[in-house]
Image (cartoon, rainbow, N blue to C red; front, side):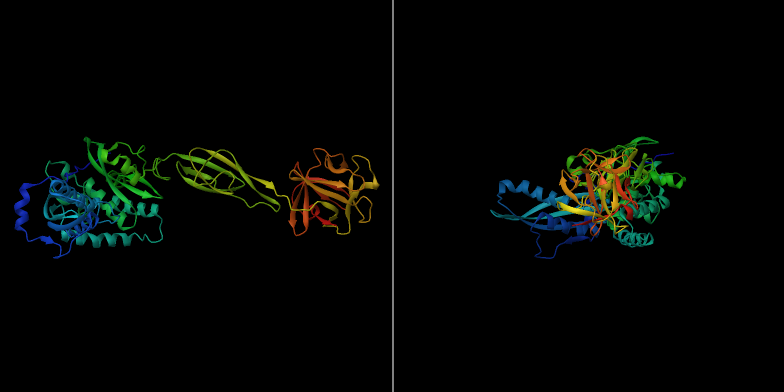
Length: 512
């Protein structure tokens, strides 16, 4: 598949095109601020210059009065710095679709000059004159603005997230704009508008610069930060100068090359250059200006391609005891949620290894993980002890309200079975005391503790099976859950141990 690049004409700010000066003076396009209006900062002066650029004025004069300590020895450098600072400010990124790089790449020629009008020890006042030629004109820009608005309205972006908006704009351009092969066949520019967003949207033909400016214009007009990136790209004609974009989704920037993907789409193939990290963007190398620490701070790039971008590697996520299972692209930030715990339990942690993000962790029932590999996570739960005061209680069966736990046949023997009997039984009173996160339950008469023997609840010496949790089921109702997870279960006569289900036969009421 042929990879097209488009020659980018980037003019240094200080370059002067003498061949166009006469044309400037012959045009009645001289613009100056209203008499008496003076900008008192470089930022304000830059905004004024930007207005003229947006209106496609050929000559713009901006008066700036800047506070500071100046003399005639320092004035020369200060004048140049102010003139250049105003120009840089005018072309800085603002988030508006018709400003920033959009203005910069629509310039075909520029001349700058500065004249000192006043100076003292507290300020300097200058007139800065800027002369421009453009690839388009005010009529083109007016027509384009209306058509961009109409195109965005047709995409029905309201209510869509940033990814959905970017994808809709990308599909729109890639499906409609044809690459201008005429430019590639000649060293001269056959149609200057092929380098503009107007050429791309209205004429439906463009080179990479036109594609990139239209994507920039539509994204920023839709409220999505987008930048134009230039560099070298290796296409079918070898390595050439090229332009593409970086677009912001969820706080990070991703590379897109709508020029090359338009060729893919129109051939009925999947995108290859959509929402890519720098590492995944094949055959592209940025110009140095877009690799600086300052630019990377302004436009932080994602270290991975956007989840779901074509070619992104996919991994399986299995969630046991919760939601979030599925197959996801590398780099996906996935929310996992543990199922609601049964009464008397609380979520403990996720067992398994994963990369947690957004200040979440394995101990959060609702957590976010970044998908970087196949992973299995299991939600685990822990019993929560009820707040029960130490003291003497009778253990009443909720299911059989007239019966209470006691020792069989009043026996004081070790391993004598715990049964259900009369409230009046001399062995029906138990002393409950908390120690180390568990409760010990001792028969007050026999001085022996509730233990387990197989599946039976018995009395005996204090040992490893004497530790119980009192897990609250409802107001005043508890389950006796042994440290090994078995729960005291009360039949019509006996007390046995079974898996914890919180049914009525496992519920007791503590009575003084």
